Amino acid sequence: MIRRIILVLVLILLITSCGAPAATEAPATEPPAATEAPAATEPPAFQSLEAPTRAPSQEQPTASQTAQPPSTQIAVTRTDTALPTLDLPTEAVNAPEQMVWDGTPTYLAESTPGFAFRVTYDPERWALTTDQFGFPALGHRAIPGCVLAVTAGRGLPLNMTVEHEMLNVGDVTFDIGNVFENGALKFVTYVGGNQRIITGFQLNFEEQVSECRASAFAVLSTLTSVPTSQATPTPAS
Image (cartoon, rainbow, N blue to C red; front, side, top):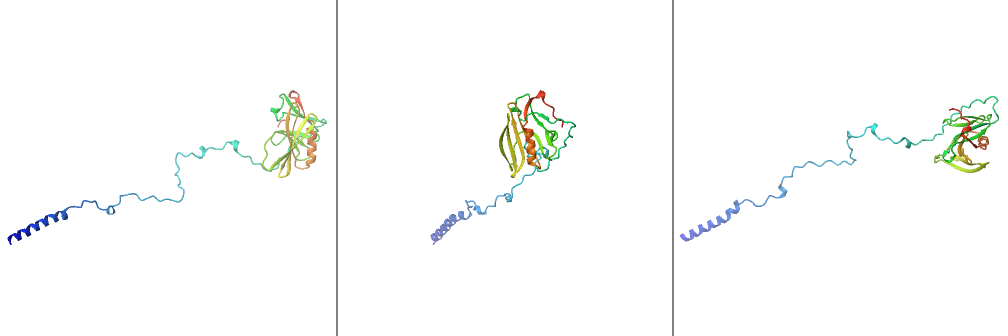
């Protein structure tokens, strides 16, 4: 009987010694990640659908510092404003039947140095003056707006076209350009010369176009060249 009691006590001690450490031993694994507190972060910024704008900087150029386009790039707009009427000088008393207009050729590179152009005109029909741009010109006394002035080649607007014709008068060859604006004849150019000079003229008109052209060509058909030492000074502007 005593042996049985001792054996029972020994078994109880063995069972107690094996189960106690499992109950008191701390867990070896870390708590699940789901139970961890989230790291402290700032909330994400709101994403606007509009393009971001940059705050003005003190280094931005002011209005006076902003680059301006060169003046040579400014486009000149052509208007249909009527040209001012030329102030024609009074016809001289006892004027000769023919007078001369001498001037510098408008195509100097193609002309011989030391020569001027000369045309002859009737002072009863034409007056030598300056046009609205300050260049020498002949104004018709009887046909309003009929003006023959010096000119040189230049570009034309897109709504303008030109038709050329060649004409020989004596030793002078003319390239005549009829310039049309939207189908209507606007003005006529005459570029002519001989062995010494090449010069250009432009004929403007408002009415009596045929009469103006005929009278102007009567003047241009006298085109010739003279030494500059023999040229008659043009009137002061």
